[in-house]
Length: 85
Image 1 (spheres, rainbow, N blue to C red):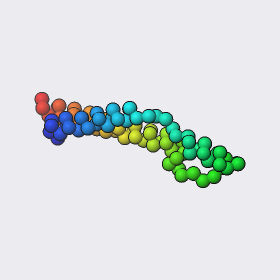
Image 2: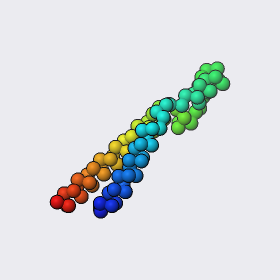
Image 3: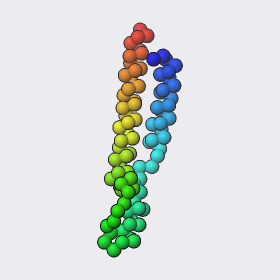
Image 4: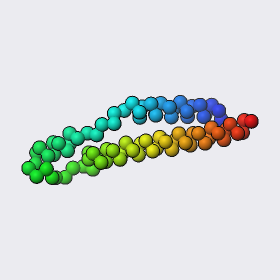
């Protein structure tokens, strides 16, 4: 890995982290509320991706993925720093 490749990867990762942190953390309950309003019992089939638990899990997985990318970048940067000495 070269210093230039490390710099490029750092910029891309920084952009992705900023985009993730600036995106809303709100769970969309409109599908759940609409389903409750249209049926008397409040039950019925709903796509898993629209459930609040799936939305929270997806956000958590995105955060873990970014965290792993940051850790990997730190390891590569320290390895490159050790080679440059």
